[in-house]
Structure formats: structure tokens, C-alpha cells
Length: 157
Image 1 (cartoon, one colour):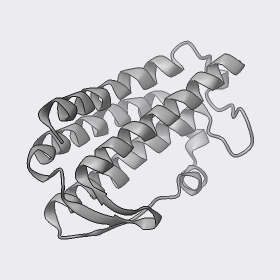
Image 2: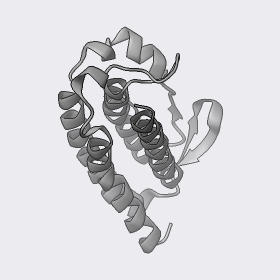
Image 3: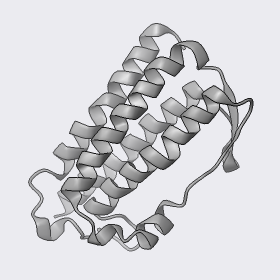
């Protein structure tokens, strides 16, 4: 991963908290728990999922890729977390604030780790081998998916 690609990726990841906040801005509180379709996430569930995945998924995976030789990285079941952790009853504002804080920590790990460890590999669940650079790209793609779902939710309402 060259410096320009790395910097652009870090910048893209750094924008996510504000993009997420913008995506839910203006939604009345009554819509924070509305799901556009069965099996989909409500706005509060999106925020809680992103918050928890950031802290308990991405940061753990990044640290393990940097510190261990070919670690096995665990997948998470976001739908199970939503139910088990009661996302629908949580505060959207608090989840957004916590996500922002966790994303800052992730950015610190990547800003330090990518220049030296971009090619470090791990075994990631059903996905096969992933590098630190590849994981960073996957985080950005995951972000984009959630933003698309939230935009669709806004347009539907």
C-alpha cells in the first residue's frame, strides 16, 4: 500500500463518524427504531453495531494482525448482537458518540500500523487470508454499506 492510498483510506475512515451523524440527522426520534424491512437494522441498531464492531471487532483484529503471526480472526454476528445487547432500547446519540471515540482509536492503530505492517496476514473466518491493508479496506467498504442502508431508510420515510 503506497502512502497516497494509505492516506486516502485513513481520511475516508476518519470521515465516517460525521457521515453517520449526517445520515441520521433530522430523523425524528420516533424513527430511530424503525426498520425498513424484516431483518434490517434501524438507525439506532446501525449506530450500535458500528460502535461495537469498531471496539470489539476491528481494533482487536488490527492489534492481533500487528502483534501475532498469522492469527485467526473471529467473525461477529451483528444480528445476534443487536438482539442480545438490546440495541433497539439504546440511545442513538450515545452510540454515535461512542462510535466516534472508538473510530478515533482505530485510526490511531491504523496510522501507526499500516506504514510498517500493511502486509501482515491473518486467517479471517470464512473469508480466508486477510492483510492489515485489506482489513482497512474492508472497514471502509463496511462503512459504505451502512451509509447506503441509512440513506435508503431516509428516502423511504
